[in-house]
Image (cartoon, rainbow, N blue to C red; front, side):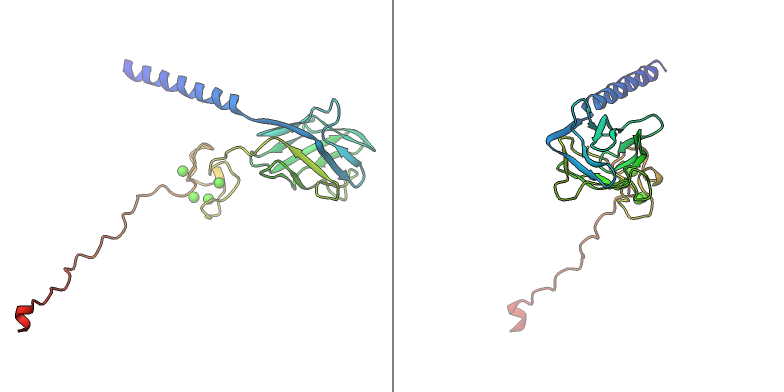
Length: 205
Ligand SMILES: [Ca+2]
Ligand SMILES: [Ca+2]
Ligand SMILES: [Ca+2]
Ligand SMILES: [Ca+2]
């Protein structure tokens, strides 16, 4: 009983250490000052590396402010909103412009070399769309995709229609196998039939 309690405490201790280590490793990036502009159809040039904007890309979110030449600051992490990052660079959620309201970042992706691509916003909204792929549009960060597990990568890795924690084969986001564990099957054993016997030369004679 005593030993069991000690073991549990040790386990708790190790889990805590592991969580802190993970937290410490969580990577952040900033915007490359040489590649910082996207184009807003209503907002004009949008500077992602403006002085005092302090845009930070983390494994979970974008924070800081983007400068619109026509409408001023856009808050990437407002109260009741915020732009989320799923660890694989797929963005979602809302930024806030004082003059134009919410801007949906769904549709924007940061690729594996840190380039923003896609479109934010909606044509019907006052803020309109933001294009990251136009001529002279180029926003880059030194943040890189985190190494996601199969149960946290946003994909249906085993094609059973269930993604990540929806899949009953995922015990947690740390689980790296979305397919059933199941028994390991041995390959079929080699046929045991004896090779045809060699007719001895003496018999032929
Ligand atoms: Ca998955
Ligand atoms: Ca699945
Ligand atoms: Ca699993
Ligand atoms: Ca599955």
